[in-house]
Image 1 (tube, rainbow, N blue to C red):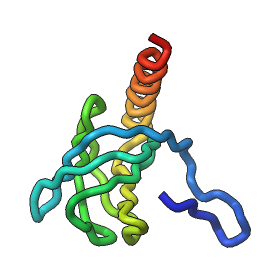
Image 2 (cartoon, helix red, strand yellow):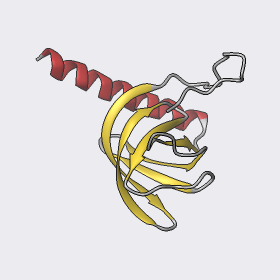
Image 3 (tube, rainbow, N blue to C red):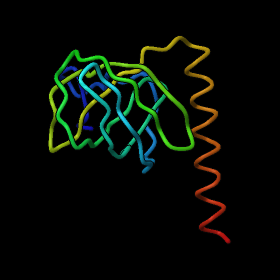
Length: 113
């Protein structure tokens, strides 16, 4: 995802973003579309899909090895990357971060071994 700032260089994101390549399916009111995760945080994700989505459109991401996360598109597609914000509370965000950390650990272990 493109970096978002307030015009003065100040970062707007509240959550650390992790690069994580995973397969996924995006479910919307129009259908179910395969795609790929590029990066993820407790608050959202950047995804590539075979179908374009519109800003404001509701979507549920079913991410391989992570789970299912409801959210919505928060901006226009840029360079084929669709920005998604998750509709989650703090406890759900904490659970997602734990899953991301577990995936990151698995990737590091595979590279070591």
